[in-house]
Structure formats: structure tokens, C-alpha cells
Image (cartoon, rainbow, N blue to C red; front, side, top):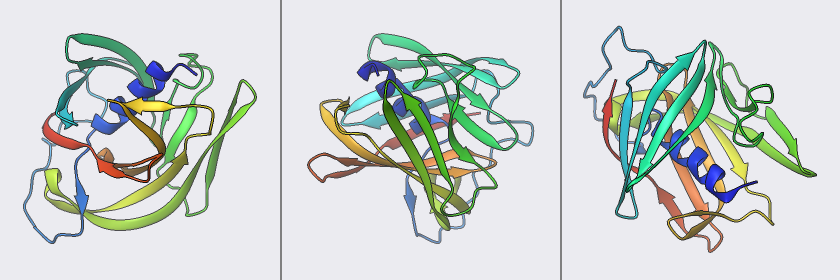
Length: 200
């Protein structure tokens, strides 16, 4: 798999309605307008990671196949993801082949559910590890999230601004999509991506 493509997947997923996750009880309210939808064209997210600014914007929605323009510095790339009523999938692992989606989450998932994908003799696996309620700072709400754990197979070195990623935990919500991402590095370090604006 191309390192750049998996890097772009991480950035896309980390900015589709993402923000910091913690257990605070702040009851503020920052809901999107009632007419806003996760897959609407024009939705834009900005984040910072390791002092680098990242912007993602939905530029097309063709029956749930989303095209997202990702800008880091002066570089812009576009990748696709799929949003249905019950799931989010990506096409990075299939090199953009929309006939071969790799499931990120199903919103009716149960703890222990596993999603797999085979590519070039390598097996990729994502496992639902929890359904827990967390306070999501940028939304000002307590939300039940679905935690999905993914380990990057050895032999594939995914780097984000010079940091080698070994495992990821994605946290999803049916209304808001991805609400948090936790990254664990090959050296055992832990990171979250800091989100600075969400425009729906």
C-alpha cells in the first residue's frame, strides 16, 4: 500500500467531524444546524497535528461516495470514502476501487465485531472494542461512541509528520461520524489530533 494514500486516509478520517475525547461533564451545546448532514458538499474541517495545519473539505457526494479534498501546507489531494445509512467505508486499501470498500464502522455494531480486508497477501483487521459514552468537547455533548481498534501490520510503515503509527482507535457516532482518533506509535507514544474548526 502506498504510504501517502494511507496517510491521506488517516487525515480524512481524523477530520470528518472529529474532536478531542474526554470524560468531562461540560453540558454546552454546539450542534450543527438541523439541515446539516455529515456528507454535505462544502462541509469543512480544520485540524492541527504536530504544529501542521490540515484542512479537509467535501467537494462531491455521488450517492454516498464522498470526494474529499485534503490540504496540508501547499499540497492538496483528493480521496474517496463511502457513507451509507448504517456504515462508513474507505477505498484507500483498494487503491480507489469503489467496488472494494473496507468497512470502518457499522453503526449497529456490537463489541467483538470484526471487519477484514485482504490486499497483496496482507490481511487488515478492524475490531469493535467498545460502545461507551464520552464528552466530545467540540460538540459540547456526551455521546455514545463506537470504538474501533486497528493495528497496522508490520512491514507497512505509516508515518504522520515523521511519526510511525502502529495502531489507531477510531471513535464513531451515527449522527456525527468520526468524533475522535487516538494514535499509538511504534515507540509507544500516544497522540490525539487537535481540531480547531468544523463548518457544516
